[in-house]
Length: 309
Image 1: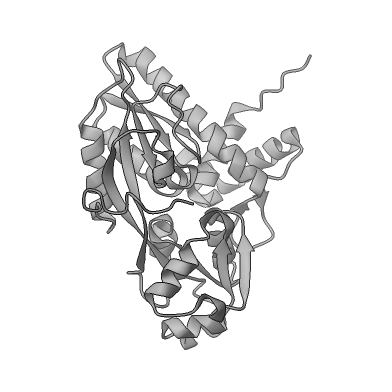
Image 2: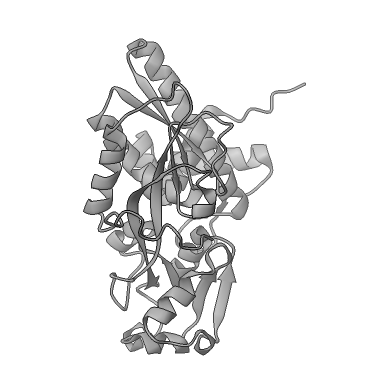
């Protein structure tokens, strides 16, 4: 029976391009040309028989199948890297097993992990993702969750606040007319089925009725809301910490300001499993990153009773 394992180089190109949302940046990371990255990804798509990127727009973006594939195999590449480091460096390197929400991992944690590994080379991070409750039957050292129903009885340690903010393409027609929160009621607002709480939180904070937002485009996940906003399909209400890079690069803009309103809290939960790896440097580093990115930790207990989603 022929092997069903895809080519490793094609997988590397896919993971890099998905992480950066750019063939050019992936090429720089891999020290190859953008054309080589494109060819590798095309070969992977032919192998799988499934399109992984939508190339119909100016910005390449993952398809729904591509996004699901990325969240699975990105973890595997991390584990391969850690296994290789352990083999080369001996048994002195400790591995931290982190269980994280997929969207948080993709947009916030993964881009920062190289900084952690540079600062703490003696610690390797093995990242797994899950959208629901912590599975205490699986070995882990730390978990990151937002919904208190997913804490599995573990004590939540405050990590950071989440602020939601309206974002859109800088080339959105009529952008100059978006001057106040009420102006948004006359535009197409992109909402997220998995985060139905965001628009109500934002509208309530600005004294607006939810029924005033009559033109809505609903998508399944945060990733697609961000891409739809970049493509000029409307104004998306999304967590600010997930759009830090597109705001910095100018792919997105926050027409009403980037401060936003509090829409949730993230917590770090430490395993109580026997023999789990303890590494105080990891929680401290996470809080430091939260502060430097403008997402400070909530006060102890703040938001712990908030409904998840």
